[in-house]
Image 1 (cartoon, one colour):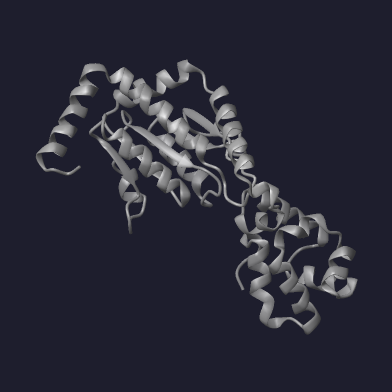
Image 2 (cartoon, rainbow, N blue to C red):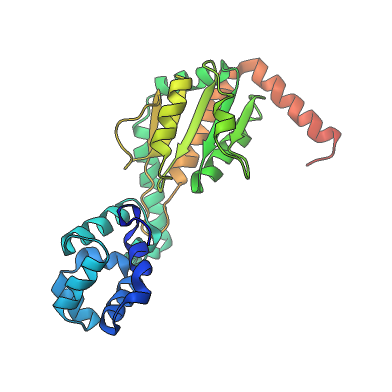
Length: 280
C-alpha cells in the first residue's frame, strides 16, 4: 500500500477495498460514489446513509490511516477546496448548470481578476519579455494547454519563445539552459503538480524574471518576481479559465503595443511566410 500521508481520500479507500468486510465494503462504495459529501456528514449520518453501524465507520476510518473521522473530513474539505472534480461533482445542482449562471460566473471571474492588476505591472512585464534573450513558458496538466496558448500567441511577436517541457521531456535539460537575462512564464493553476513550489524556487534562483500565473487560492508567497492570480471559480465541476485567457490577452496586447514597429515587422514577416506557403 502506498504511503497514506501522500494519498488522497479516494486513493486510500481504493487501496483497501479488497481487504474489507461486507459492511465496510458497503460503506467504502458509498464513500466512492459521493466522496465530496463526506465533508458535510457527521459519522452517525454517514453510518445511517450507508446502512452500517457507527462502529463500522470508526473501524473504516482507522483502516484508511486517519486518527479520527474529523481528520478524514478535513482532508476531503481540503481536496474540494483544491478543486478536485471528483469531490466537487456531487455538489452541482441543475440551477448551477444553466447558461446564465455560467455566464455570470465568467464575468465575475474576469472582473475580479482584472481589478487586481495595475497597468504599471502589465507594462513592466511586457517590457521585461521584450528585453529578454529568450522567453520560456511552462505548465503541467491543464496549465500546459494555457501555457501553449500563451506561447503560440507570443511567437507572433517574440521569435525566441519556447514551451517546456515537451512530450517525453524532463525539466533538467531545460533548467540548465535558462539564463539570468531570460524571462520564465509559469502557468500553475489548480490542481498543481506536487513539486511545483520547489520548481518555482529553483527557477527563481537561476533567473530573477519569473512570472507566475496562478489561481486566487494559491499560496500568497511565491519565489517569483511577479505573481498574477486569476479567479477560476465555477458553478460546476470544472474550473472556469475565462479569466486566465483574458489575462493572457492583456499581457500579449501590451507586449505588442510596446514592441512598436519592430513587433509589427516581425508579425508582417510571419504573415508573408503564411502567404508564401499558402498555409492559411
